[in-house]
Length: 307
Image (cartoon, rainbow, N blue to C red; front, side):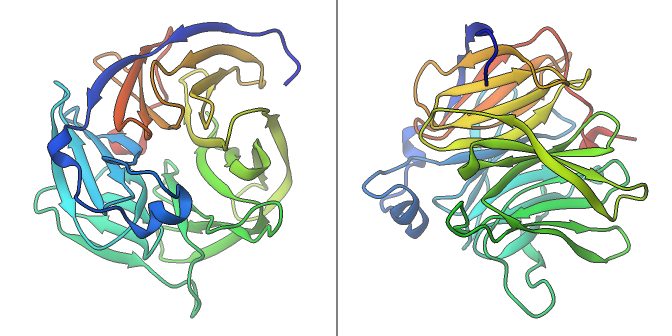
């Protein structure tokens, strides 16, 4: 980016996973992704239900955690998997991008987790990462695996409400978080190991991808853009993993604000919440905390809260 530095604010710690939640052993995922480090809970995928509870995944230990409006954590589900992203359907079901198994569905009442999409055709996923719903209920998700600039085989999928599964792009160097713009004519896609956010465009009807290009080229950090969120005016929120920063960009890609973490640099994902929807809740994986910052605008209404 070659713009003037934006204003900065520092987020507050809203909630911290308690010490008794720390498992006695590490995980295969952490041993590969972050060798030599132990995580109480590697938090990602924050999503609010209609009662104000914030659900997050813990990819290290195969758990779905629920944080209530007072900041108290409970384990909503514990299963043999590697949950990496989470979004809530408007019917209340919780959809999970599981790095090991594919797309899963969780019942928020019983905590039961079941497989939903595990094999595209007759092959395996590389390792799904994140997901989002369009307003018509179509589910878009990324298949990242260990792809990168050295091996750009990451994919973007769409699972349509009629049951069709389409691979929209198949040569992405590390696709991660994704969110539609305010008109849903474009999809913003975090490409972590390129340190960039792409703008994916569609022909009318949403099936044919055209003119995809770089929307924002970031720099610095030890990883790259991870989770994305959208403001009600089209502002793009970018969790910059490995920099301890969340960027707030205008709908034209200009820096508006830098939100800094008070501790830890693994600022992964974010979600709007609070009574007026103007508080941004940020998962900081290194310290197993939920950060919070107030913004001058609310977030775009999520599919989970649509009538």
